[in-house]
Image 1: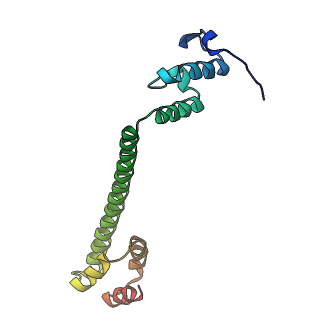
Image 2: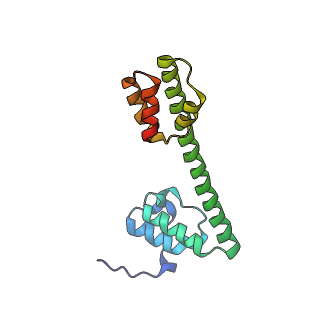
Image 3: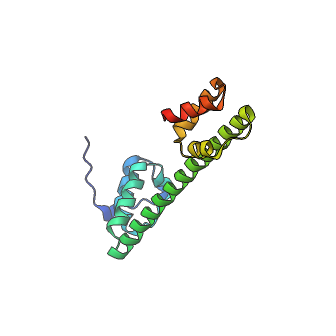
Length: 148
């Protein structure tokens, strides 16, 4: 550990003159209240960027904090919607694949079997795509579905 004693008003280096990690931290400590965003020179040190984000949060009003929190919640909700949409897309594609394979093997598939297939979990549908190759008749498929 190294201690550095410094009077901040006496630190006169400009942003372009910061060469060492110590210089960058001292500049940050002196100028943090004036920085709205992290300058590129300081952004090279991820800890300084994190410190600026914390300093900005500390200086926010209650209303600003509420806005930031609502934005974070909205972003998380959007991520959840995207993940759900991807999962639904994969589920629908797998159902379509299974139905095409079954139709190719056995011709028209009864609605009762189609609806059972559409109710399967993605993992079961993926297993079914492998099992289809072993089915000799619709009865084999019905037996497999009953086991689920």
